[in-house]
Image 1: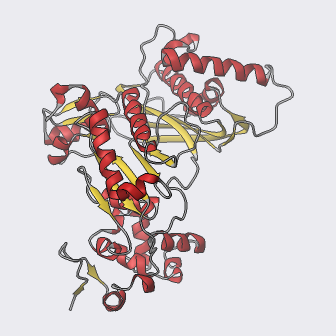
Image 2 (image 1 turned 60 degrees about the vertical axis):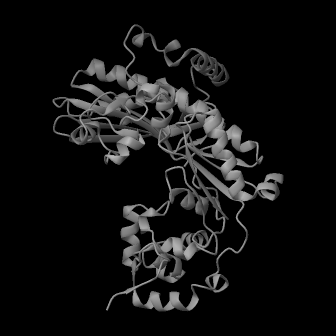
Length: 451
């Protein structure tokens, strides 16, 4: 006979019999569970339908209409944000534009406006710093704030601060822009709380309700647990967040999880701060473009590759990083085959020209008979910009080259990406857009590496 754990009126998730018995014995004892008993002082604020909502705020004609923000103005492009009206129709982030049009042919599709979104992101951070100096930008539409020791924590409490933040966002950024606020004892757990109600929610998770909340979630609802990780946990018999919570380090090892990682997860699941939400430093920088018309032309692809390499180099320098592993990826159309190659260089590089010369060699190995629909370039094997051995036989002074690149970056910051470009690209139509990667702020001057 199947058993269910009572989740307090939200509906049960089937649990293993051994877990049900354990839950019945200890669910009311947070001390035995080892939960963090501290009062919550951490908030995570997540802008709802961020890009689409910002566009609706900017253009009143878009309000109340199904709206999708896609990486490019092509049917093959990926949707990066959709309005509430679009989501109600089943149009979600990650869909292709043609899939959205199949659901609702009249959906409005727009390309992103990164400067507009960064401006709202900066407004969010400015609002949060009014309540605490300890603010962390987690992505362009999400940030956390630590209220510990602040006057507003004592005066308003975490819920009061959350409400004040909501009111300030609507008052200053616009009435179309709402946010979900999560409150807990760690950034990760506050993130789970913010996910509980993605429509202007204000939710709290602490030792009093953690078990009940976990009881109504799926394993992949937890941040950091994707489908592949869930499949690995299944090897250890873990199917739900509650089974994850009650697992021992030895049980987690059965899923292939390293001992230190397992211990970290068990603390994280109990509301303790294990590390910052980003956790792992950025491993690569990349840029890709979906062509409006697939092509076999070497000239067109080389020019596009040059633009992509220039933008990767610019982002590298903005992040104060260099890299030595160049990779190129291609998606063919209409048959949707794929090609990818990578090359490890003797030393780290950070300029578009250096990346381009290596990437061009890789691109030459593609199947020249097949039309390219998507082209991407990436640089991995990252190090700090100042690291590495200087080349004694380089034709140009490293200091002079660095000053030149810095000067060009400043010009682009002020006048746009096309203000300074290789001579080969002069007079050519701009085809590569400024983009914001998922989980990134997109700020050229952001020095903190992102996950």
